[in-house]
Length: 111
Image 1 (cartoon, rainbow, N blue to C red):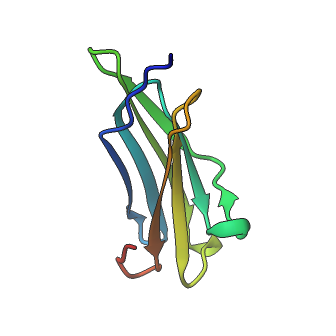
Image 2: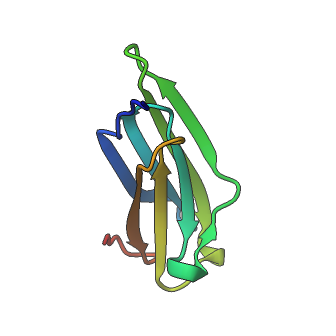
C-alpha cells in the first residue's frame, strides 16, 4: 500500500523580473513524497518544457516536502500572448495536476 499526501496548494504565478523579463514560478506546498514540478511554455501538443529553471526544495519537520520551480523569461523570446503551464506529479502515484496562467508582456492577467 502506497501512502501519499497531495500538495495542500499548487500555485502558478508571474512577477516582473525586470522591464524586459518575467519570472514564472510554480510551487507545490506540503506534499509527500517530494513532488516533481515542471514548467511549460504553451499548451496542448505544442507546449515546450522550460529549460534553465531553478528549483528550491524544502523538507518540513513532519516529513512532507515543498518545491518551488521558477524561470526568468526574457520578453524577446515570448509571444504577444503566452500560456504557461505547471505540472505537479507525485512519483509512484497516480496524482497529477496542471495549472495554467496567461501572460501578455506589459499586462497582468491570469486564467
